Length: 464
Image (tube, rainbow, N blue to C red):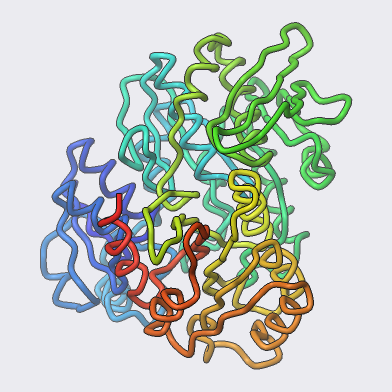
């Protein structure tokens, strides 16, 4: 088959494109926003990418157009596809057809931690010799890839609650028919398509209803929201957490620069494990993976060794190098809770060092006023915060848009210094003036910082 991708540089789209090529299909695509790591990933896999949208692209013969959910009516190629009655499909439907149906699927869901947990699940199964196939929304460092076409029976995938396409507004994960479902957490997110938390919960309830009776749901037992959505269930259910009643309980022993040591009790065994990353949320991710792995039959020694050797995902607390005396880390922050737990983890990892956050309000959630107070609380963990202008702020009315003036006022009141570049080009000069020897600079963005992201990455690369 010949697949032509519209919006190919999205993390999931690029990953699917590479996976299809590994399966033997011809794949190419186009996008308007092309930057690392996915642009480099596509290039490394010899997948041709055109810059920008042009109806002339459709003259190259293909069997089906894959339309990413970032595209909408009005895009010139989308309009031409519809007018010419050309065959098209959404990303999740294509994943189901090509990879889910012939496999046993392990689907990782939740507001936070999906990418890391999916990568961890894939690595534990790989370490156990089960050769899983997987598709992750980021570049996993253990595989140096976001995909693998394995030889085993399991297909591991990140189950996103965002909609599938402009022509299919259902959550992506409804296409994936899990045999195993990890349900890590649930908060309000994606303010552009969901009106409130109840609307998101409804999508998860629909997902739970299609899990087979022999399937397994692994749920965060410490989350009242998660457990309420899981009532009732028609499949097997295991919970994990600190609280009494969880099927799998954990207790953190210590956390520092080397990672987090914790104890796990499954009712019959008590095992000490190490996650080589700071933060309790990383332990929670690991607990969900452990529950699935144990149900599949993976032994404790394999789990211990696999977790200890897990390297994480690019753009998730990824160390870059040094800039103006500071150690620079990058994280794909998309939500106040994710920002908060990331900064808390860096506090644990580097106690006593000054922590500087660089935050770009870019996602459809963080650019709105909905989380005005929560963002101040999260960023207030840092000693200083550089806040860029709101990404494409002209899309939102003043009353709906995140108020940077209010955010600055709240942060100053909490004792956090605030830096406000007038534009992206001022980011690096202002950082160069402000940063001191020994600082930790934490990037919090899912974008490119107007091109400054790549410049900073290049500058730090020279120091490694």
